[in-house]
Image (cartoon, rainbow, N blue to C red):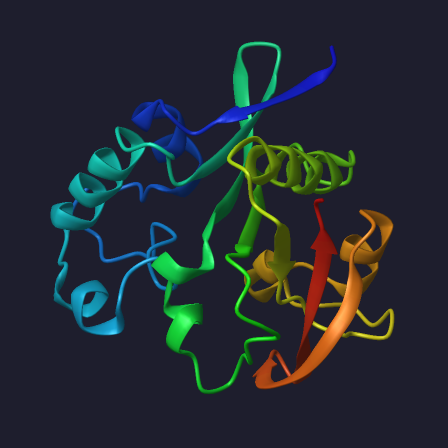
Length: 190
């Protein structure tokens, strides 16, 4: 079956990709960059899932989901940069004052990795941002020079993934993840 990428409007599907096994566990839920740090840290246990449920009902929803047939197999967080912690980041620079969108997390469920779903999620995130009139979209992947990235840190993507999607390096950052420098990659949408 062909993978289809759709807006993340169905909370149960987002939960299937991002949610913990125990509802009261304090896991990311992809809120670390979406909310101001103080708000993110204040959310405990089930409050985190409740916040994501509310975000799924907003326009735009918090990202996109990949489906293989009827099964949800992946997630990409994408939203206007102005509504994320990247807007005030000291480590990730702003290239200009354009109302760009950010894609900061790409996750593929176990059992579905190695099938190109990350590429489809990134392409879907680009189309999602374009559909909302974004002039450009940015990502902040690691520049790993082809070296293996620890699976727990691979959520930001790699320079190669973004280059294959048509993004170009726009700036260096002061952010490092898993020992690799992160770079700002950008794709103009107009």
